[in-house]
Amino acid sequence: MKKILVLSLLAVFGVYLAEVLFKIDFGHQFFLNGVKDFYLTASPDKLKVANVVTSIVVNFRGFDTLGEVTVLFLATTAMSSILYKGRHKLGERAVLFSSSRIVMTGSKLLFPAIILLGVYVFVHGHLTPGGGFQGGVIIATGFLLMLLSYQDYQVSHVVLSVVESLAGITFASIGLIGLLNGGTFLHNFLHTGVLNNLLSGGVIPIIYIAVGFKVGAELTGLIYTALNEKD
Amino acid sequence: MEFKLFDLSIVEYAFFVTSVLIILIGLYAALVKKTLIKIVIGLSILDAGINLLLISIGYLKAGTAPIFSPALVKNMPLTLENIKKLSEGMVDPVPQALVLTAIVIGFGVTAVALSLVIRLYRHHHTLNIDEIKNLKW
Image 1 (cartoon, rainbow over the protein chains, first blue to last red):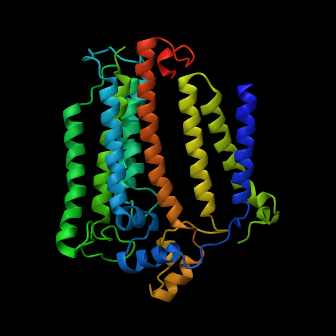
Image 2 (tube, each protein chain N blue to C red):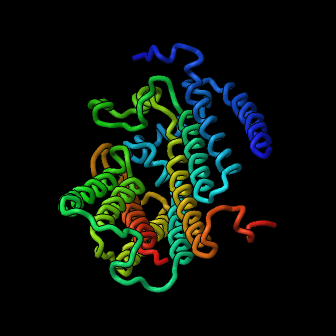
Image 3 (tube, helix red, strand yellow):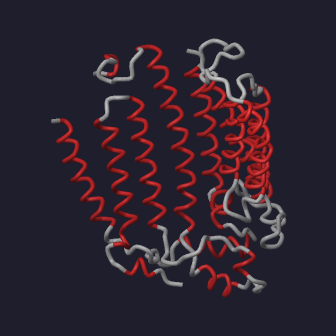
């Protein structure tokens, strides 16, 4: 009975949602003189950033990104405070099986390459697809691989929180320096350079590198908390 | 460079139809399923559907990624006219930036929800919401 009710409700919802969406001409520009044109023009012209998505995320909507990073930090804190239940001992963790030697050696070989890929993705965030969030997630997957394959692999919570706090302080203080120099929070106060150079875009690469470190440290801490959760 | 596949009028809306279906599947799982893990999975699917919907709204037919790469610029002097000409064939970057935010927030929501589920399982030793009496009003 409940299923039929829910299905009919969803059918009504779907019909109305589809009716609205089918009025949109798929694959055509329908916001004439929209914000798209402003962003696409201002990003290579004024900021000299090749990746327009990066310039929107870090510069035009930089305050939004600061809030987003804060939400991620809050999620990490909430998760570790919800799951906190006494200190775990070495070897007491959710992964109860031991890995074979092939997996252990292979992940030891792959780990530096994954970290390098993550660093590449967030250092080149203003030139190629990717950025701080994506690079941070790649770094966290490297740590996940090590944590899954080695039973006694330890990540220092102190180092993680120091990296995270330093990255957060860098982001906020760059915003404050922009406030002092240009009058607005996160104002791009550095020289913007030449389009498609590695050192271009002013503060955008610095902020994205800080975001990459922060996201990598947060997600690593989150995975570590979840894996070492003591029942 | 035209994609002949999208000349059919019904196929044009395949992205919208798929994203609406994904949203409905996620909502169905969140409303009907009894296991808490399945409800969280349903919320995740709902998230993915909304992200797909936003990205497909910003799509431009045969459009390129909104990146002024060296291969695209090709030693062109970057005057305003040239930038305008290049940016006409680019997809909308605003939904992509918003979806990047939405993915991160969705990840945080999923992480907190799953940790709450772990905590509930520890307390009640079951994940069935009918058996957890504290959840009822």
